[in-house]
Length: 440
Image (tube, rainbow, N blue to C red; front, side, top):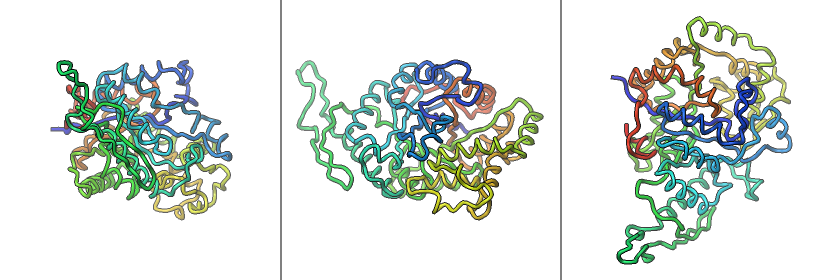
């Protein structure tokens, strides 16, 4: 029998101009209003997904990249996704929402209080996607850190957040009208945390949870990122080549990191980012794949703009026919995972010129041949089923705009096929986001 998997949606553009650059933009939604997102998440809940991860980038870029990042709305503008979440929670009943929260921008006490409030308001459907971006430090008067120290700061931040959540000890919240006792202050911990990065005094001015803490999501495939996830996260948002050995190996590293932290393998789900291109027939698959073999310079330039935005580095000034020296081109603020993503599966930057790397990004493959992600709904379902059966995969996070046309483009044909095979839930349980993630 097929194995149920978990599915989510990565709101990849963030709270910014959805569908910009595509004809879908002409549907006329106002991207800065909630109605667009409400309609989209209601469809995701109808599809049986578990959670939506809301991407964010605090900075619109450095002076040298502002125009690059805003010209085609690749990196900005972006409004605060946390403030969109209440609209989405109010429009749904089961779907969980995990906006990106950055320790650089949000002090532990504020993050803990906001999370506690939204967790209570939503019946336990709120979580946090904890990121360690350091490029935005200049906006907050915080010194930048290197990659590993940024994770050290995030680990301390999250430990303080959790201590605040639990500063109301067992029996502190009484809520007994008969005895006229609302709380027992002797069981509330007014602790003082003095660490390397934070000096925080408790307790939290919010009542405790009775259905588990908010779910923690984290990205990051570096050894330090995986160690962070193993110690702290319920969901690891994974970027990796989608072949069976890579997926199985990545998942094993996450599970090993959890074991090193004294946690059970079942305490964390590894969900791989997946962006299939679903078409109606095998003939259409052949046409799409063939067209990708000979991309135009305009198509390559569009890929270069997107990579430049993701890497917060203007790659458009480089010679396309030269090799990239990553040490010279990228600063410490750039994610190692994002740099690796530019390689498009190549072993090193010495292997291909920039033009050749862009062509690798443009090239598409057939899902039926396990050479890429272009396929019919049946092809993509075969792919997903194989990963569950052979690699023990926990599930996938689809990635795209949070726009109704994008949601339907991904899911209209795929959802019925996944459900027919028993890969996708047909109903939710009675619990919250944590319960949904641990149900199977």
